[in-house]
Length: 481
Image (cartoon, rainbow, N blue to C red; front, side, top):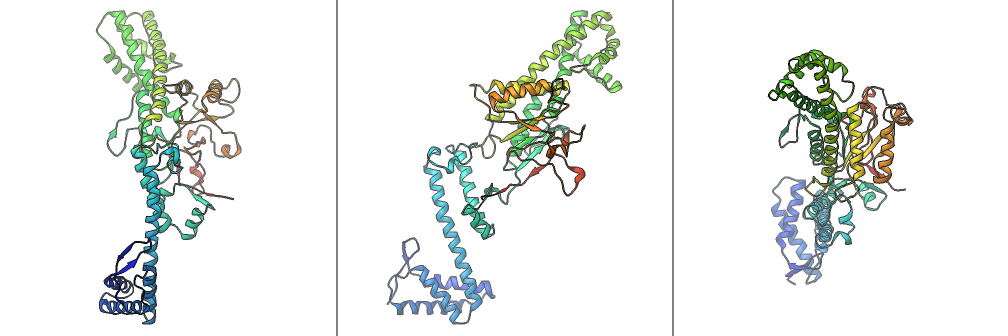
């Protein structure tokens, strides 16, 4: 009986082709011997066809034909080739299975709304109904299937599929790390590059806040987890110092213009203040400016009598404090709005971000913390609670835990803000598992948390470097009991 068609696994009927049988056998020979077994493969294919004709089935199934190929190879003594053919057949089955399952997943992504699809709601930080959200999901689900079938140990893959374990972030298994604790003081010093351009070192609190967002957004595209700023209060305080110095200079210039009626002296003051800092290390600061004023005043003598210069300095300082406070609030407000609206990771996800603060007792650091919490308490434009950044307030006896301590007022503000807006969360540095790492005067030993509430500070490889700054993690596997 002459066969003209076969039945495939999915029920479709296709033309019978003896050459395809010979080609599959040839590939098995190529995998076990040197090429050149084409004639042998053709002869064995003919033997398979002869058996099919004797069986008399007009439309044999693909699975049965492949069973016959294995049998013919074994009967003719080609045991290794039969093993190679079985392996090839198994791989092809895996590919077919993946394509079938994957296409079902893709169908769900394409035609279902997020409200009707658990798959598209898997990550609350991604809008599964947007074009980029769907594209991100296409890639994610394809990667998961690939790793399941071709990368993971089969025992581990089965345990994940059956729910005994859960391999988090499986779609990024071979690609990148998870979270990072970013040291913005180190990052901003001298500027940094995102890979698309170099950014200069910021010189204003608004620039510090903007570049903090850019650093988080950029790193979000290089990792699959959340991004954490480990020293938000210390890092942003540098921006407040620069902003205050500039505003003090501008206000002093205005006061001196009123005194002497001369042209704007700001440029001359800029050089004067830079030279004074170089020689004495003094610069205008939010508090304790007496030594600076005393050193600066003789240099301002050409602009008027000493009493007038004192009033000019006091005026400039008072105005600069108010304006810096306002600028800091606006910078923190912008940071919060940016981190809840800017997109990263294929344009579908707002950066999963965290900031750690609470221990800086400098006037500049305190101003940063006060204003980031006030901006959080005020909410977004429509009064919504800002989801990002996740905020962690460090609590420590001697710093902010008890009445009378330098940052106790900020701890009280943090409690009020958290009661209304869920953030900040609280981290207690006096807890034994945190205190064992803490070294006074070393902010890098203050415990910090990343986007997923994970923490990295221990170091069994080098205990002398048990720090938070610049550390990160790999993803995790949960065991379901």
